[in-house]
Image 1 (cartoon, helix red, strand yellow):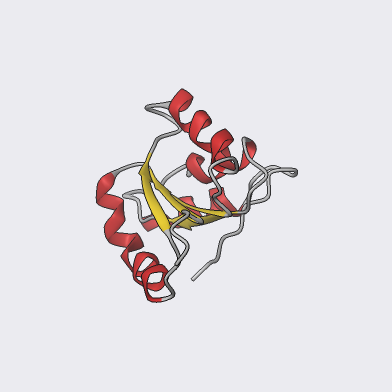
Image 2: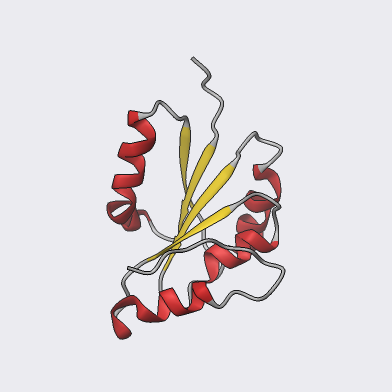
Length: 118
């Protein structure tokens, strides 16, 4: 079996893994090698940029990135890689996460980020 990591799951805080546990279960059920990374566009921007720029060279094929509020992490990662980025909105105390969804849906042109409402 190929153990090369193909999917990277990025989140700003370890506690966010609770929301992404279903993604982890699905990847495990299909035997898709993945990694979980905690990085922040706000608290550690240089680290986040290194992560995003180096993902493709490490063999990553897709990045799942979660964020809440202004939801910078998925868009910032997408700005520094050509890999597909799937944004997962997290609940926030403001607007119950609607702000996260709207931020992800309104990424600037040229920074493609996939997300889903509902």
